[in-house]
Length: 96
Image 1 (spheres, rainbow, N blue to C red):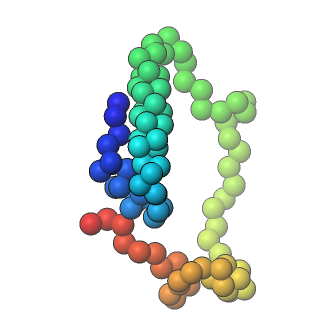
Image 2 (cartoon, rainbow, N blue to C red):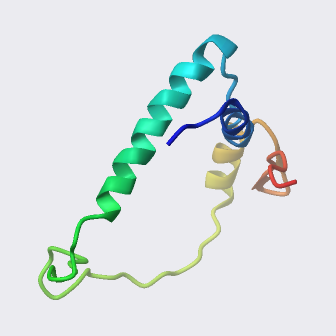
Image 3 (tube, rainbow, N blue to C red):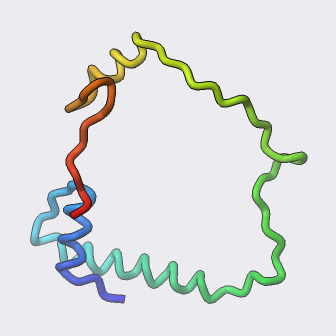
């Protein structure tokens, strides 16, 4: 599969990366090879293989999910955020 320059530009915008024009061609080739590899995995017949979700017998031990609010933790985390508002991270919109 060939990844063209337009696809690289879209991926760069979605990931907020700056990709040099000189590297776009080689990146496109590498991404194309990755996609081809994944497509090869789709051809493997796994119909006789039983699905495995965990290696722990009896399943995954779960804990009760209790929401808590610690103002000191929130302040410490928000100090590292480039932008925040009302205790939440503020990020640029990526969906057009």
